[in-house]
Structure formats: C-alpha cells, structure tokens
Length: 167
Image (tube, rainbow, N blue to C red; front, side, top):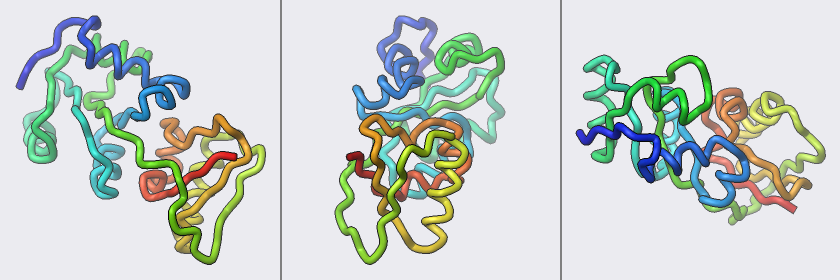
C-alpha cells in the first residue's frame, strides 16, 4: 500500500473538494465516510476509485478493504481529519463515482420531493421508497444533493440504488 503524507496530493485535494455539494457536482464523485457506507456503495455496484485508510486502522479492516479494491492509500489521522473537516477520525474514507442521475425506467411510481431540505428526512423518504420498490425520485430543486453524509446514513445506503432527476 502506498502512503500519502501530504495534503497537497491530488487524491487528498479531490477528496477534500467532495466534502461540499458543489465539489460533488463538479467532480461527479462522492465521499464514502466509514466502513458501513463503503459496504453499502459496494453492495449497490458503485465504482469506488480509491480508499484512504488510517495508518492506525486494525489489520482486520485493512484486509477487508484490500479485498474490495486495490487502490488503497495509507494516510495519517491528521490528513483524514482535514479531508472531512472534523476533530474526530473516521478511519476509512472512499472516493466513488456518482451513479448516473437520469431516471431511466420510470415504472409505475415516481416520488417528487418539493422543497424538502432536511438531510435526515430526505434519507428516510428514500429508504421508505426503496421499501415499496420505488427507485425513481424527482426533485424540484436544481441543486438537490442526495450524497450528503446524513442523507446516506438515514437512507441506510438506499441512495446508491436510487435514480434521481432534478428539475
């Protein structure tokens, strides 16, 4: 595994940019913050480009991550804190391509979100839609972003199997 020791490394710069909605839209990528979110993305066939792993991560975590992708980089806890701009460490951060945003098959049901702004509520709505087999969600907000961490957590990863279209 290669070690990244500078916040000026292009992979760290990209990961830091993905912390914001604007960065996610500009690069068409999202952050996968933590092992559980990484697992949800992989289960939904989201292409993971690379993983930033804490140098202090347990060997069990290292083995699991290496079995999922070959693009794993060891970084210090300080760099991980800077990537997600927190005072605490999330020992594993992935960078993944966002799925295509167009709703392909509208099926029988489409849910339209109009002026829903709370990320937790959005995630819960997405998870409920999945329970009823509804994969298509339309939003009336052009800058709607389902890849915010709180939304991903509230949806229990259902965002990765959702087709979103903004109007």
